[in-house]
Amino acid sequence: MSSPLFPFRSPDRSPRTAPALWAGVVAGAASVVLLVLVALRWSPLMALDRSVADALHRHAVADPGLVRVNRVLTDWVWDPWTMRALIAVAVVALWWRGAHRLAVWVAATSLLATGLQQGLKAAVDRERPQWPDPVDSAQFAAFPSGHAMTAVVSCGLLLWLLRLYGAGPGLWGAALAVAVVSAVGVAVTRVYLGVHWLTDVVGGALLGVAVVALSTATYARFAAPREGSHRW
Image 1 (spheres, one colour):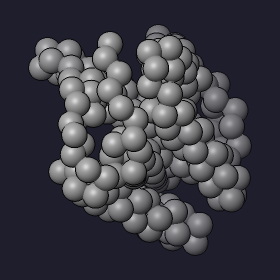
Image 2 (cartoon, rainbow, N blue to C red):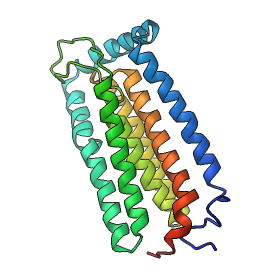
Image 3 (cartoon, rainbow, N blue to C red):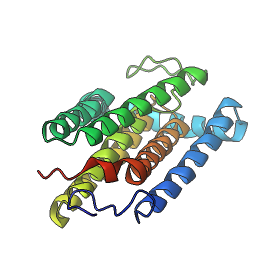
Image 4 (tube, rainbow, N blue to C red):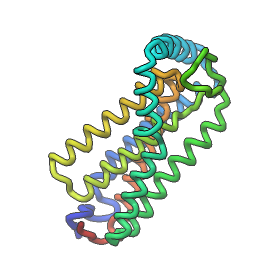
């Protein structure tokens, strides 16, 4: 039986399961390929990374005002902890409204993404170019980028919740625009400041898409029919 909140007719016949599952598989496979290339230090990939990072970083540090703007955006607006705080607010709201299974699912997905990102970052020990850098003192490239992955996961989960709760076109469109600006903004600021290489940002975004897609597909297939209806 369907409900306004969870329009899934059965655990194995949800029309939303297959597209999300395939999106997760494709994004996950692409991110694994990228991870292998980074771990093997594939020279053409690293040469592209180095040239892009070098050109963008040298342009960025030439404008102190722009550097400060980028620092504020990446350290406060798009910081991983800011994104996790948004997810925490959503989890508390879901729990308070009685959607306990969904609240636990969202929290678990966010924690899984964080653990995956940190584990892969520790496994890939790749030194990045050393700049005369007044912006950031990091000594190692971070694959996958925590900022990129957390932004994609957090925005993706929040958009998914809006869809589950039947948000109208206006709210949905505004939220989608914010999510796109956030994802693109993270990519631009992290690469532009020379903090990450292009591969790190792309890899983080792909892994974020994979986590969200696989999580939503699994929820639609197994958990949603048992959740029940919880209206706002």
